[in-house]
Length: 451
Image (cartoon, rainbow, N blue to C red; front, side):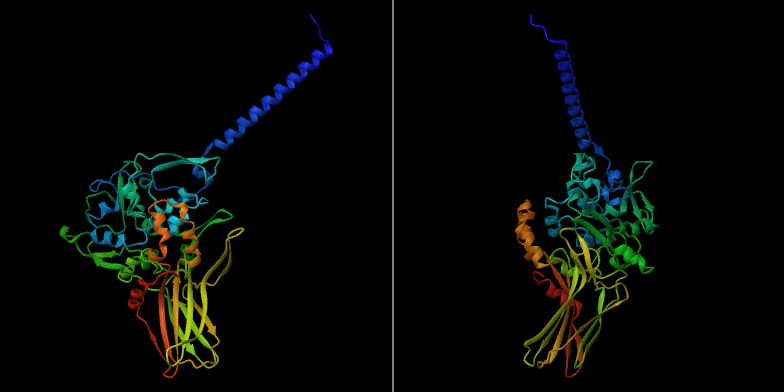
């Protein structure tokens, strides 16, 4: 037997201990890393105080109604249901532009859906938390109360009108007026209904340098100190029964539920209902002055108690003036825009803002041509989607699945990009101005394609 010197044995033991310690540190480090990387962080901790970070909790069936779907509400509230079906809210999920944005690999889909299908019953899964607080790594479990019919309804009636009683755990309807005897439980809370709009339409938040939500409509309204609410304009008052005539309920002051916005609907077939449901442009052509050395156009924000445009930062007005000679040939043209300008790369940043606050005037001065102009035509076009953007969406349609893939590929024919909201002609000889009616403009808008 060969014996080792004591010094060799000592060195060997020391090396062994170092190796064990090193290996233990690696194991502990890996374990700690895996634990931290996989730990589930509550959504409330990542987005403290943000209502939009979670959908409305699952709603049990409503007594006297059944599942809290818009379709079931429409069994009694027939006119309101018909109006809602034509609204932007009803098309919040099926919106072709939204579906294209949702399909991007960079889209935090579950967050976007919290505003576009805001009730948990509409979601196939429940987000219980975020791995390591990363909003791109939601922890999901199946939702036993998922209702596919309700999912298709987008921003449905229950979004604003149904909640769960904390004591009875039963669903009830939030009403704004009272004095009725419905078959379902009801609580009157007009203030809650009016404030609900702000949860999605008054939020500015930066997720990362290229993902920014910027909707400040509520703040713009509040800054005017107006006594108007979102409902004042977007849900015009109407005298009618709340429910269908066969129920023999009294006629009262109610609100239309078309939720008309900027006049660019989600489908071409919806143009015919825009005016009926309450649309009128926020802006008016307050002055059209033509002189030898200048043309002056004044656009006033008369009908909106918030900025115009508002909401989506990529919306804008395109203003154009065209001069015609005596045979009607275009011989002069000039354009400008009213809206926000953003730089999206390398980081999202607003670089300019020419929007019109409530009650204020935008003045556009144009130097006229020396060519023999006989008449001018002015147009204001509300642009929601630029052609260059929709072209990119069409090219990127591979991210989508059927049926939205096919819809995006054909979005120029299916999805209104813009609407003419003001048109006026000016005759130089007679110094007379003639405005095109809104009804005629919207008949034409229904046939326009692209930007």
